[in-house]
Image (cartoon, rainbow, N blue to C red; front, side, top):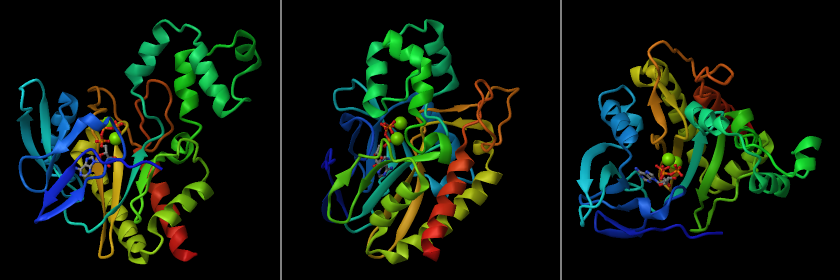
Length: 292
Ligand code: ATP
Ligand code: MG
Ligand code: MG
C-alpha cells in the first residue's frame, strides 16, 4: 500500500491530496490556474495535445491549456485540466492500453547490440523460474529485446491489450501491485474491488467506453497515430463516474506509408498497437460484471 500524493490541490475552495498513479513524482505540480495541473513537458506529448484539441476526441482527453515555464526557467510544463477536480474523494484507476508498451524504435535499438544481461535474467527468474529457456539458464543471461517482449506477457498487456497500472480506493489506500495481474478473472477481481460500494459507476463506465470506442473509429488523430504507453483514467465518486484518455508521451504519428487498424496482431515492424483490443476487452469485462 502506497500513498501517492505529490502535492495538495485547491479547487472550488476545497483542498485535497492530488492522486498520481504512475510516472515520476517530480513530473507533476499544481497548476497556476484553478482546476489545472502541470506535467513536465515532453514535446511529443505536447504535439499530440495540440492536435487533440481540434479532434473529435477532445471531449475524452484533459483540456490542454498551453505551456508554462518552471519558476527557475529550467524546464517547461504542459498545463492540463485536473480530471479529479469535479469529484469528491475520487476513486481512481489507471489502465495502460495496448498489447505492448515500448515503441518499435525502442525494440530496434535494443536489438542493435544484443548483449546478454544478467540483471534481466535475474528479474525474469524472480517472477517466473520457468520463463528462461534451457540455454538462457545455462548462460544466466537474456538479451534486452527478449526481456522486453517477455515482460509484456507477465501482465494482461500482451493477451488482453491493457493492464492495470494503479488504483486508488475509496478508503484512500493505493496499490500499484498489479505487475503480474494477467488473467481475465484476476483483472475482474481488481475491478470489482475498485467499484465496490459504487454500483452506479459500472454502467457509467460502460457507456463512456462505448462512446470512446465509437469516437476513436472516426478520429483522424487515432487513424494517423501509433498509441503506446497511453492510459485510460477511470474516476468515480459517490455521485458520478467518468473515463478519459491520458498520457501521450509515447504516441507518435505513423510513417506516411503505414496504416494500422489498432486491432490486428502486432508483428515486429507493423506498428499495430492493439489499442482497440484493450478497449474491447475492457467493455467485455465490465459487461460481464454487470450481468453477475
Ligand atoms: P508513465 O509514463 O509512467 O505512465 P507519466 O509521467 O507519463 O507516467 P501520466 O501517465 O500522464 O504520467 O500520469 C501519471 C498519473 O498522474 C496518472 O496515472 C494519473 O493518476 C495522474 N494524472 C495524469 N494526468 C492527469 C490529469 N489530467 N488529471 C488527473 N490526474 C492525472
Ligand atoms: Mg502513464
Ligand atoms: Mg507516460
